[in-house]
Length: 89
Image (cartoon, rainbow, N blue to C red; front, side):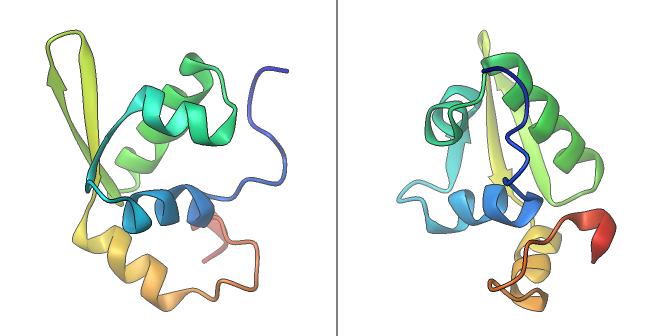
């Protein structure tokens, strides 16, 4: 199954970064955890970067992603008990 699982929120993706041992993750790191395709993951991460809650840097053929201060604040300001997307916050 490709594309975004309907039950994965922006908050859940950002939590993966917050809770990771390494604060910098690759697109494939996130895709593996969400069972997304690489293209679907790249699309979601790019959208989150446009919202300024993630930042990235191209390293060789890969892209490294990390949580921004705004992303951390979003996590602090939203309740984990509710499904939360940035557009709904």
